[in-house]
Image (tube, rainbow, N blue to C red; front, side):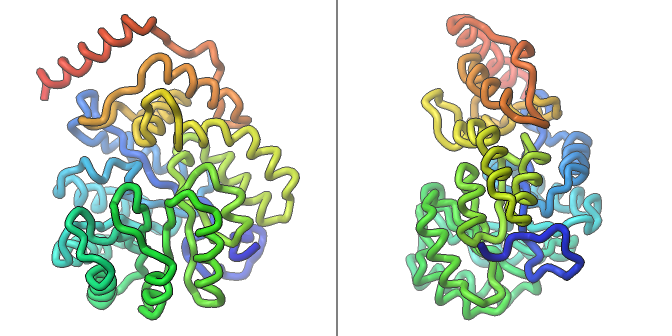
Length: 342
């Protein structure tokens, strides 16, 4: 096991980002067209009170893809001073063009970001040579650690182990977030990083304990919005070598992590996490369209997963459920109401 945060040690950590890094969800107004700023700051405080080790602002879970450019800037300007260096903070600054990525990255640094998470150029990707060039130029232009973001299922571009090896030559590339869902790939990236000052962060929630045991320095964890206390406990158990306790806790955490990653009820990760976070008592609001609200049948499954959590779990009697025909009617009405008010 490598680079797992030792929360009992007084020695400084080698890496700024280890342990539980929450991909912060984005609370919205009733229409989903405005960010609920008060709820966002309150949610951040709740996560920090639970003891999480870092935050990712403007994550995919935070509806980065659906936010307008001015909203992204506002979130950075609002959240980073509020966090006030209580934990390390990374900001996603992915843009389609190199110039926009540099500009967005500089804005985040100016407001206190400790690291920047950047996707390879997507859609009309420039292939490997252009991807390497993109990262090299961003790294030259900004004075902050960079986090490579490898999620080929979403971006259509893979940062291969060979590319990762080349990118390690750039001094301020300090992390890779890998979201492929392949434990063997995580182990390979850890081996390539070797004794360098580069951390491998796992972005696949259902792999959490296994990725940490395989040498990942931490988790960039969307489901930590739902259960930050359990996530911190899990990392602490593993850091202390308490593997029996860690796996017993993981048995209770796994159902909701697994459901969010893959299910047969047409629930995507983003709306699923927001719904579950709301169900445990946090104020989240709806997802922004074209994402759709979670149906009643899916809420039953989410509720079942939440009911096993020892700290952030819920009482199953709290669920409001409608028969499917009523649920369909309710979804249509809710969408029409949003269209009328937006």
